Length: 357
Image 1: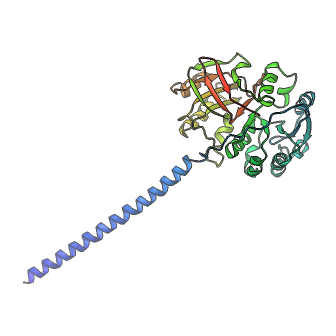
Image 2 (image 1 turned 180 degrees about the vertical axis):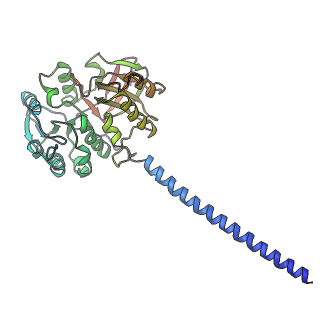
Image 3 (image 1 turned 120 degrees about the vertical axis):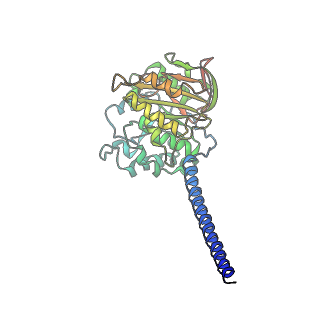
């Protein structure tokens, strides 16, 4: 009888130990599952940044007598900026100046508040028909979170610039749906080439569809195909700088335009790889590679810029055009960011449905 009692106690002790072990394992698993879920939610949140697609807002086109506000949203105004004034006034436009045009704070066209206020005020002002930047450099990312996107959306109008202004053009387009313009500024408008002026007219003063490849024939077809979607992009380093922010570029179902200047080929490769790893090439409809000025090889063993392009884009099943004359180059072809386009390299066409109305 004593032995049986001992066995029962041992049995009860064993069952209790087993129960405690199973409960601990369950709680550990549930805890791990909770952590995994939290991690997954964070990853999903990161990967789905800025995936909202706004309706396209087409701004009104320009006509003689309209007023254009000039701003320096990045670096301060320099002597080249006055070529832009001369060209615009010669076309019969009135020009007004934001506070940033004549301000200076470090290397910027005034403080962050001054530069952001210029943009917000000019969008809110019904007497101003368009906003043109006079310089790039650096500074857009410092004010992108200071823009009033509600005011911008309710008062749509042309805003144009390039280089560092990519940050502002993309943010405004992504947040509001307003078509913005990767357009010429400063000395791009000095002794303006016919190609630049023709593209300027189609982008800013016409309400008709047009062929983005119809202005200049020095581009080349890297990969044949067809695709359609909104155009997005701009300066490569500024596009990459949006990743992981609330202003992250959305490339799904779109035609990606990229340009760059004075970047070594390995640095271009690194930035393209970062975009690829972020999934920005997964759902593209086409690629337009603009001017990549002075793409030096830091080492003789480095890839050339063309080899970088083929290594990153060669396996994508989308149409690709390269050496398109837009960016840090003359002549300069304006690209409407956010406009609908149909790309057909067999016909040598990138048809812009409408940039202005």
